[in-house]
Length: 231
Image (cartoon, rainbow, N blue to C red; front, top):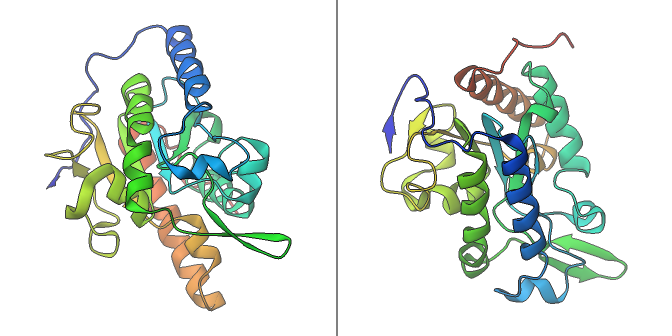
């Protein structure tokens, strides 16, 4: 991955938002029938991305959680609430952003009545990558942010490391998404769930500040940030 400063405008963008919305709806319907990996067997439903069809900024998480699996929408649980707050604090609006996940079905371990998050395997990530590439190809964002290590691995492969590369604008080189987003600028940052799982309040505050800072940078590069919102 090569560092860059400013985003290059995406080329070949689909010009009519209704066309993009229709294509995304068709892909979501097809994804709902996907059986490419075993995760569909226990999940309630596939959870496709949502947001502005021609968004300049795309956020990619790991997989749906329990709340998302039930609702059929990405980032509506506790991690989603924190992400919404960080988006606002970064001077952005969730309605202007496209949010999705690298894996579309919830992978979990049953513990009594509770379904506990279980990290998806590499095979699950590979099986879901075509759906993510479809979303990127249709939306054609100027900036793509990987939230967490699983999303970073799906988008960029092993060359990008979260702790080393977060907070830096990266240009696509030879990655799994090179053809889908040849002109996009890429960022990696912490997943909001990782912020919630931090062992101390001080560490949670630190990670949340870094997440907000990275989203502010993403908004600036995408031309969408209005500056940090007052708390």
